[in-house]
Length: 42
Image 1 (spheres, rainbow, N blue to C red):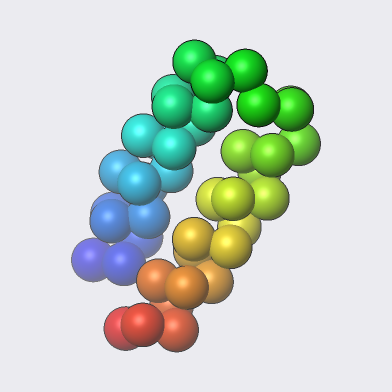
Image 2 (cartoon, helix red, strand yellow; image 1 turned 60 degrees about the vertical axis):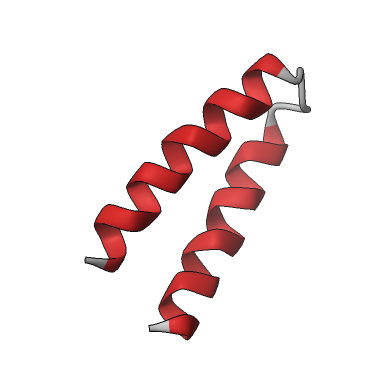
């Protein structure tokens, strides 16, 4: 369940950051931190 939630969040964050013209490394860093938070929160 955590992986599914992270995948959905990751896809949405990636889309939002592409639209917002974030630096290329930013989506990867945000996804990594969101995954760690989701694992911690479980």
